[in-house]
Image (cartoon, rainbow, N blue to C red; front, side, top):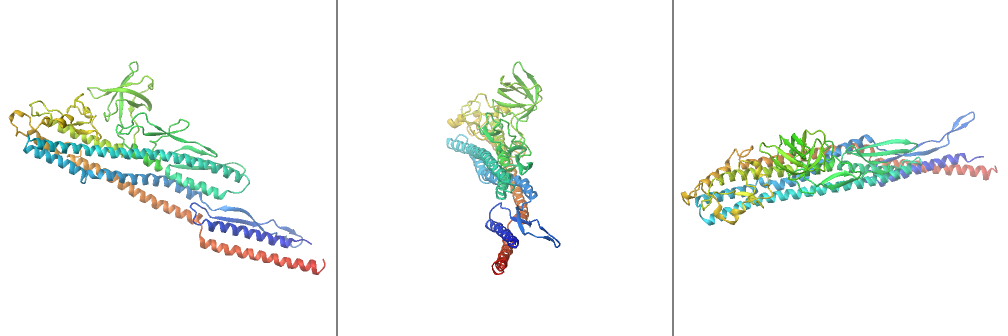
Length: 572
């Protein structure tokens, strides 16, 4: 006699108990972020031949605890998250820029600008009154301080963006460590033939987070029996390959990519020394958002064409430039080869001759030159450059009139506006815009000579005509409404156009953020409908498996009674 029946019932008991444990695990993790529902897959154990009566079943067993996860939804989410990460960063920080620059079209610029011209108007009624001159001086200094403050606030934001870039690089490295560690744990467990479901969920959850930081792609390749190779790439380069991680690092720039930049902004490299291409159009995620805001020059980085080169003299002459306000020493990229320069000269024909560092050899072919990266986004450098353009053009327009006049002593008047540290050499030449490159929003101010001696303010072209002569002041007053000063029109229109550009970009970032959030929500709902835990369904499963367990236990009891009668009462 055998105990075949009780063995079949016992297997049913274990099968139901395992299914209950899986259901219990699902219920316990119903609110766990990133958890995928699991099911116990069971099958009938191989039947035995029953001679003359067919096959006899031997019960059931759980062959696998399966994770319900659809890779299609994962990939869809990861590809979309890069845009949410990028535009959420831009949305938040463009609002901050709006807060800084909003005064330009509100109270800040208008108050300072109108106040200064109001004092010029008052001075024109009393040109020789020291009190009116002092009041004008204070208003002009305040006007300069206003731009100095704007520039410093933008620089602070750029520093913040730079720190955020480093933070994101650290986050990527930390995630790479976690992924490689999980890959090792998963590989060790799955060598035994079982799936490490919870660890796989944890790994996918890390990719969820990483996909918002930088654009990511994942592939899993079977390399042997129960052996898979899990590869994670960011921006097309390998971050994690199985249990091996590649790491990023930041290096402070030795040169300025944009003339407006803060020093020591970070470039990103792989620790192998390979440069991480931060200007790649395919780059995405929060890292892309911070880089665009920090480096965005709207494609207005220095560019030009090579006119001639002298390898013996280590010089190269560039023409057709889009700007000349570049650092006196730095680095140019000649046909994508970086070459350091120690100085440059602006030639009478408008071309620029760079004096190259002999230690950095030139490429054999030299046709194009640029400085920094062509970042086609209106970030902080763009808005700083626009402020620089305003103060340079405004200073040049005012100085062109002021230098036509005479001071109280009858001497030719100098510049009314210059920059902090200006010594008069080389002189500001109203006929040479390049001479005004030294003026920036950061250092724009009333000229120091006039600050120290109010008699140097020219109110008239000819001081000998009398103290009440005010023709210079009247011409300066006309500049307030000069529609030819800027391509946007009068000075106030320039500032309004600038803030309008920012408002459009901020609105676009906000719309894109909201749109991507809705798309992400839809994808997550799709993923949850497939992988999420439904407590109502799990409750039904619990009752179903509990019932199966009870019946299996009852069957054991029945079989026990049968064996008791057969063995003990029949004496078999």
